Length: 110
Length: 113
Image 1 (cartoon, chains in turn blue, orange):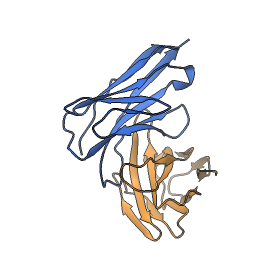
Image 2 (spheres, each protein chain N blue to C red):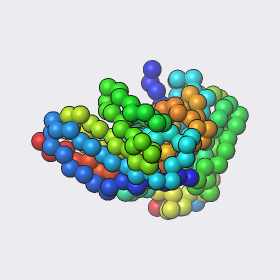
Image 3 (cartoon, helix red, strand yellow):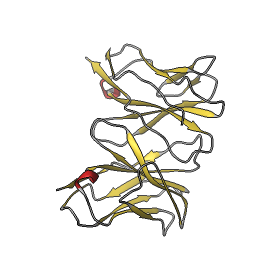
Image 4 (cartoon, rainbow over the protein chains, first blue to last red):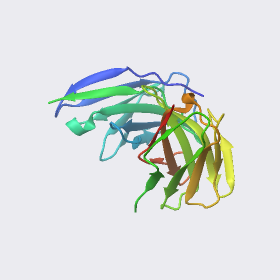
């Protein structure tokens, strides 16, 4: 399985943008890039996913490098409720499971 | 819709005891999954099901059994609990396996003494 590398932790100030990086240098052409987040004492929650093009939804934006070896999750205005562990996951198109790494723990300061 | 629910929320077992964790989803999803999460780590897949009556092993299946007798329910069993199975267990479901979102339950915290 292709693996991802994320920083262990990041800090942000409230109402500022946050860029969460993810490296996936061994990604294959059919791997989707998924992002989930896990708030304290809750199950993971879907954030966004993409294949080749940048993606936007109401929660975040996903910027994918042209060579697809890295991606960045962008929270446009961080709030205290965005404090969570963010997981970057690669999923083969017909894969039945997701391999979670340790993720990035985002702290948002007021 | 309740989404994905899990029963119980918390349980304490003694080594060697057995128990069953119940996961239920009301979204008519075909695919269901059981994960475990140990402190400070990401989730690891135990078993999954691609439809009623079918199950398959995930990354860490040893010591667990599962059953999917009804489409909306996915049961995780521990026949003889061990301290190494102390963890938080999450159930998830999805409509299809690939690019689709997985919806997670709130988790079951299990402590094995």
